[in-house]
Image (cartoon, rainbow, N blue to C red; front, side, top):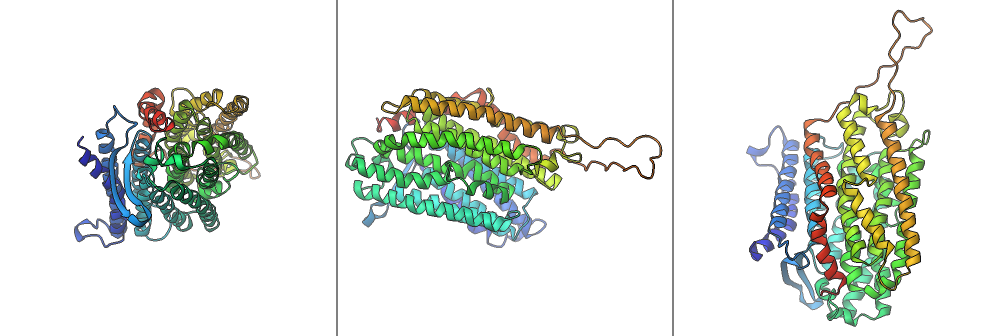
Length: 537
């Protein structure tokens, strides 16, 4: 495709959601009001996110797949000359899959909300915040200037805070405050690290900084250590890395369904993307020093997340299913960070693949759990597994089958998307980069393998308790004695509706396709990773 056309497509990806957010706050034109203003603004959200998804697909189609390691669709315009800050945009094989994933998940969330709007204030504000969140996330993956990266990184905090605080469930205010405090404090430290890199190197340009013979050469070992520590803390909070994860379960439990989908499917990826785009290529010496510690925290997080899920799923623990999936994200993102910590092409490719797989699978899981709460009135596992619980296989077989499919995909079974990222991350740990302690990373690999076994255990327990739960026995024939209790009828559980098929099928299909044809994604990421780790060569 013509380079100018690609430039316009990438610029439109960032600008369209911003314009749509402003448009959502304006009165709908008389001919587009539908049954009322609420329906009109929700339809506006579907239209704008659909247009953004179409642009993202066109960008992916026009992308030069023969050279995915080269930055494409680039725009480079001076913005603040005195500080050397430029509006620099571009995508390569690392960022393009995340851009498409963001556009897809946001569109599916807008479509789902059109039919199942979360309880809360005006839909106008909801749609505007959803579009602002999309704009900030897409900009994070598209910008190539450290200051712009920080601004885009921070933009998403405001809409996500309000989505949790205004449209969330129980304890939403406390969860929203915890989310904003953790992430803002981490971001302040990250900003100091980014400014240190820019001041010491003389540029904020991420492409120039990633080359060995560029401004990166001016960064001493000490500067790199300080920068990695500062930037890494901010990225680790957003990922989140154990033990900086405690905001995540509360945020997921309180967030509305679409908030949880976007938080798990997109926002967590911003932290790991920062490690790959900034820490690895710009501060390799500092990253090499901290890589064993990052790998250790990642391995502990994998086991910790699985053990927390096992504690929640046991009978009588009154575990919340949304909270359980949130803790599972801590474990799954641990695999991503372990792959990055190996500093090898195999490990980093595994991390990028696991990023996309987690977005597809966990996004689908949160959609399903939100719908399950709408049907059963609760996500408490003891209630869902009780005598009048979900029993999805018998009462909503398609819903139960899809939930079981998502759980199996999440535990990393071969043939589905979750398998490849985890396997490649462990392969990278088996033989880490030169200079890293192989015995240490072999230990991390063993802990990660233990985590996969624990993950299979708790997810299969979830399937057994929610999908195979018992239903009340039928009443005996004939008149019952006055003293005999009459069994309560099981409440009805609706199976998958048409709009749910539309919102969930793409995620299920892509989970299968990514598992059966991993080369489609790895063919994009590998050349870009090789170039990034090779200092731009």
